[in-house]
Amino acid sequence: MEVRSEGVQVRCDKLQAPVIARTRLRVWFIRVCSSIVIWTCLIQLFTVTELWRSNFISGITSRIYHTNQRPFLAETTVAQAPPPYPPPRNYTSNGFLRVSCNGGLNQMRAAICDMVTIARLLNLTLVVPELDKKSFWADPSNFEDIFDVTHFIGSLRDEVRIVKRVPKKFNTKNGYSTLKMAPISWSNEKYYLEQILPHFSKHKVVHFNKTDARLANNGLPLDLQKLRCRVNFQALKFTPEIETLGQKLIRILREKGPFVALHLRYEMDMLAFSGCTHGCSYGEAEELKRMRYAFPWWREKEIVSEERRLQGQCPLTPEETALVLQALGFDRDMQIYIAAGEIYGGEHRLAQLRAAFPKILKKEMMLAHDELWQFQNHSSQMAALDFMVSVASNTFIPTYDGNMAKLVEGHRRYLGFEKSILLDRKKLVELLDLHQNGTLPFDEFSDAVRRVHENRMGQPFRRRVSDKPKEEDYFYANPQECLCEGTKCDDLLGPRNSSEVR
Image (cartoon, rainbow, N blue to C red; front, side, top):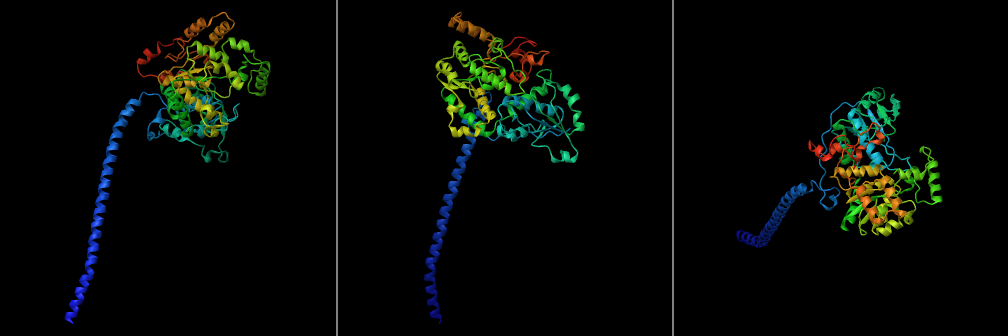
């Protein structure tokens, strides 16, 4: 039995030997694989660490370099996480302010800045503004369709509390009534503190149903003026969709060289409501007149076009614009981006301008149809694209000083007094007529045009103050309180109460 037992043990040992060998091989294989994995991870970690260090250092230098650069360059750089929003301001709200903005995109933009400032002054909670859907353009866009509403609310929370809607407990079912009113235009902080604030003790919700020009241009405390700028230049960001497409337009233009953004305000609504029909046929003039009569809210009906033109109150025609650009010395090969809606008369009216400057471009020509389709029938969103391109242009030239022209001018001043040629239409009409009737040769016409505009290139100057608010300079065209700091402002802007214009 013992021998038999030993035989069995020998056989077992022989059977276990391959198993042990396989186990050792498996352990060896696992150790080798583990070593490879560990070394691979170490190499990857080292590489990532080096890249992080390199990007960290380059990021610092990049931020230093880009501190004073112009905006709208972010598309060519690596996207960075937005800075954290400031801590919220702690205050007891006196009530809710609802506002319905009226007008086009830029009129509403300025109004939004004013309404934030008024809410801050009166310690109110601001409801996200409602945009005009009943104007001539009938744009159905809401605030969040044009502006980044999350950024708007978050970036201003250290100044004013902003909500998307009035809480339900303040509705009529709970005994609350909303007061609808339009504040007096161009009012100062005293008016709002003494005349408007008391309404909130009776009505927890007040609704401003008109917001255009409801805050004074001048005479406001410095902190309120700076808040208007902060809202305009920092809080009112366009939606990512608008920003992306606007950046693409800018990139396409810049890749081909310098470009002029021409705000050619020769659109049907402008001509109809201003009564300017210079260069139009009799049939076109009648069509514009019928349109003016079709809108009851437009009070001025009978207008003498030629008188208005001689007063400098009409936008330049495309033909007049071509002559002025040539007189100012712009080269035939200059890119001219038309920042405007549909030109009245279409391509026929652009023929002379295109003959003088063949590189006439519009967003509809530069983008594919499927890129623009989402903005079709949304005039404010289309205007936002033109606004971005105009701010980023090498030279901005408006043919009429409407709201867009003024806000772009102010934005370019804020960015370092970028070149904006602000046309003196009254003087230009006189010179154009002399040239076109053969009295003034082109060389003399060109010299005269350049002299007239030497001080109208967007240089620093102080706003003109007047006892008639309609006649004084517009805050958003020249927000001088936000353009410089300290005593150097006097050197930059010149003596106070200067009547000198650009």
